[in-house]
Amino acid sequence: FYPIVALDAVGLLLITQPSFAFGGPANDGSYQSGALSALASAVVAGLLPVCVRKSRMCLWTAVNHCSSALSALVFSPAAILAWLWYKPAAWAEASAGLGDLLLVRNCALLVGATLVGFLGLSFQTRGYQLEQAARASVMTVLEIPFAYVLQYALFHEELTLLGLLGVVVVCSATVLNLVRRQQLNDAAAS
Image (cartoon, rainbow, N blue to C red; front, side):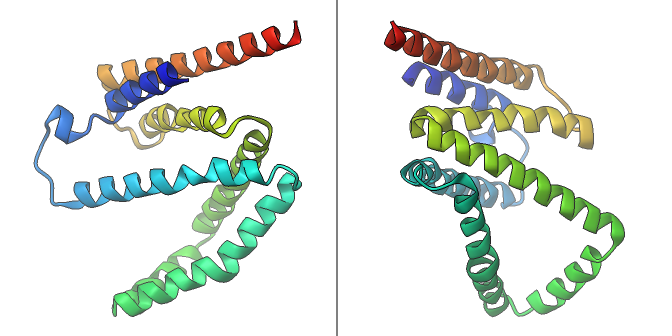
């Protein structure tokens, strides 16, 4: 497990190439804010496998639907209210955003994102219920190399040699994780 995590960490550093480790151009401060938000997200998301694993007696659809209902009816409205309270210009931003959302192209993108998110969360929930939380959460690291390649394909962002090496390292760590799990299963069966 620990060698896999170490390989993933090296791969992620090669893909993301953070400026604190690799240097880079000066930024306007949004990098620090984005990096701290991503770190907070990773810490909070680390609780997800444990919580879902604890719910393995529940049907995966019940877990996902409860999560969606709470998000839609409690957490999102609370976040919107906090945003409106914190930032007076939020009303204008929200109105403009709603107008943009009502464009057919954006509605299609929203429906597509919702469908993909639901499918991903469904597979993730079922995986966390069936596998050890720590081992299953290592698999989610595949999102990063996948997103790295997609940013090239969809947004024409430049791929770097170090980034591609990071993709190979992360994917190799995932294969090693699967091979190790299969070896443990074979040993337990015999």
